Image (tube, rainbow, N blue to C red; front, side, top):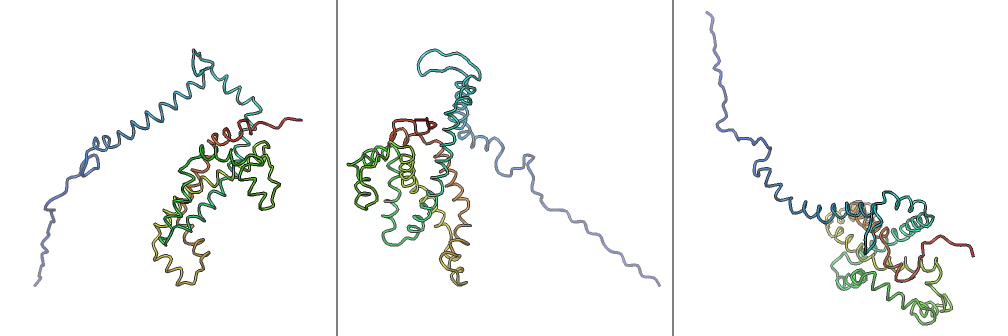
Length: 269
């Protein structure tokens, strides 16, 4: 006797299937995203792309501030790249950027470490350290111009009191001395912004990570080097980018303090 066992086949049919939109969006149609980004696109076009195109066109003309102009092609570019002062100015800008970039980052990091905790007096210190940046380079340049005068400015008075100089140093006459003074002023003025950026990043690191490092026996420097700095990579990169761009665009402090061209190539006496 042969027994045949029949297995009943069951076909599973989904009770309800979620319809998929052809555009891949389950909530918003494509035009909603376009409308949301339209203000930003208009802003970039009006205030970035259009001025850039106008600047490129102006560079191809003999455009004066007031008056008629005509198209001259690449004559301005040829004149720039054949001018020896342009190369010297570019080299001076690179040297100035290299001098001020690391001190701004180092001083800003040190100040951020001082004020990152919500201890007593931290808010006052943040305000004091950030105040030079709020005042601005223009005002600070005029103040430095007054305080750097020989025999009367506070810079020479303090240096004479410390027995470093005789109090009659003409800071803004010599190219190296003027550059050194401007670099010190810029580091003092801009490090407050770096401090705020780094401090905000430090406050975003949870205390659990520091407690774990402390339980593992890490010292303060080991914690800063292996915990804080790696977690601040993006903030440090942003600070460096802002510092480098600001150094490349530097003009105000040089013009106010020197009233002459510090970046001209040295002429034989």
